[in-house]
Image (cartoon, rainbow, N blue to C red; front, side, top):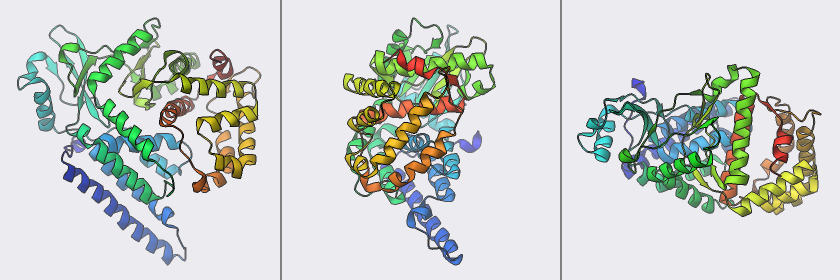
Length: 437
C-alpha cells in the first residue's frame, strides 16, 4: 500500500499543472507513435495516435493521483464504454475502478483534525489509519466506538469539492483533444449537470440523508442491507456509518448457481424498483458499491452520494420503451428511443434502416428462449451489434445528447447490465420486466 500514498493536489495551480502533465505526456506519446508508424509506411490519423494504450496509461495514472471529479469522470468513461472500446484501452481505464492512490497519514490526520478537532482520537477505542478502500472522492477507514460499535468512516480528500468545476472542464478539454467528442456536439448541459451532481456527491450530509431514505424504502426486504450513519460524528467531509461485512460482488462468480441467481434477481429488481416505484435511484453502478455475504446470501448496498430523484416523465418514458420491447414492436421501440433523446433525428434519417435491423436483433435476443430466461453471459450479440453500429458511430455529426437526467439513469441501467454479464447471470428478464410494465 505504501506506493499508493500520494498527497491530493489541493491548489488550483497544482491541479492545473497535473492536467498540463497529462496533455504534455499525451502529446509526447502522439509524436513518438506517429514517427514509429510513419517509419513503417503508415499514414495514421490523429485520433488513432491519441487513443493508444500508452496514452491511456498516462491519463489513467494522472487522474488516479488527482482523484475527485477528474477520476470520477474517467471511471464513467471506462464503465459506460463497455465492450465498445478496444480491449487494451478498456483494461487500462478499468484501473480507475480498482482504487485510487491514498492520502499519506499526515494529510489524513490533518483532514480529521479539521473535521473533529485536534483531539479527534478520543471518539474511538480504535481507528485504523490504513484505509480499507479508496475511491475518487474519499477513502474509507475502519474504527470502533467505546460502545463496541464497528464503523466504516468515509473521509473526503481535501480540496476535492473546490476542484470540481475546473476538473470537469479540464477533462472535457482532454476528451475533445482525443477526438472522442464530435466538434459540433454541445456538451455544456451535460457538463453543468455533472458539476451539480459531483458537488452533491461531495456533500456527505446529503449522502447520509439519502442513505436513511434508502434504508426506509428497503426496510421490508431483509435480503438487502444498507448502513446507518452515525449522526454525532457526521460532518460535511466525514461520513461515519455502520461497518457491514461483505465480499466484493465479483466473487459471486464462484458461488452456487442458486445463490448467484438469487442475488442477481435482487440486483435486477432493485434497479427496476428505483426507476418505477421509488422515484429515487442510486445512479452510480460502480461494482464496488455492491458487496455480498456468503454466509447469509444478503446483498450490501454502499455509497449513496449519487442518489437522486427520478422524475415521473423519465419513469413514464422508460415504461413506454419497456412495453414496446415486450410487445416486440420495432417501430414503437425506435419511437420511444427517439422521444427519450437516445436517437437523434439525423440518425433516424441517415441510419433508419440499420437502426431497425439492430432493434429487431435485440428484440429477438430478448425473447429467444422459450423458458423466458436471458443468459447475460451470452456475449454473441455484442460483435453483431458492433458491426451494425460502426457506420453510425463514425457519423459523429449526427450525434446528439439526451437530457442529462435520462443519461444518468441510463448509466445505472447499463452498468447493472454489465454487472449481470460479469456475474454470468441467467435471469427471467421478460417475466421481471412484465411486472413493471
